[in-house]
Image 1 (cartoon, rainbow, N blue to C red):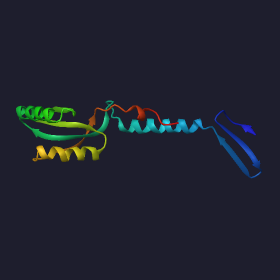
Image 2 (cartoon, rainbow, N blue to C red; image 1 turned 45 degrees about the horizontal axis):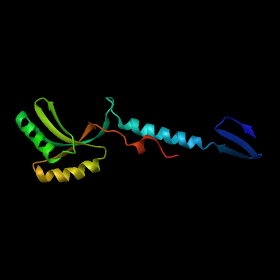
Image 3 (cartoon, helix red, strand yellow; image 1 turned 90 degrees about the vertical axis):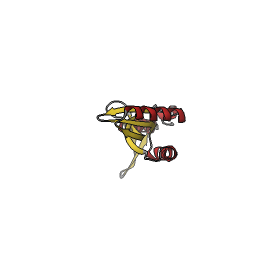
Image 4 (cartoon, rainbow, N blue to C red; image 1 turned 60 degrees about the vertical axis):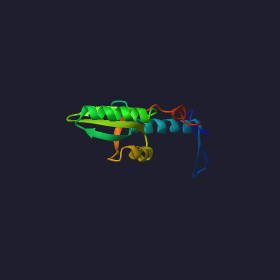
Length: 138
């Protein structure tokens, strides 16, 4: 038996057969690296996650944008609401959704209150990974 490293061993059963014995810790390392790769692909250059928000209004009126933002905060206190200015428009967006399906489900709820149009838009979102996402199961 030849020992190549601490993580893998190769043994020769016969002249044409090679058996590799892999250390189970390699699976754990692979799972951790896969999680890091997945998380890195979801993060923007600014350190925020790639996700979705719902745009409720885009208007030139600052007063109207503030009124809509206030209304959203009252109706949906569990969601974060964002007011941004991109010349010449004020945009009001709500939510931090990792999955487009989740944003679509919430859009259906918002459409009842704002029938003139609520749109799902790709955006950098605020997100903190849950503890179970931090490390893979051994």
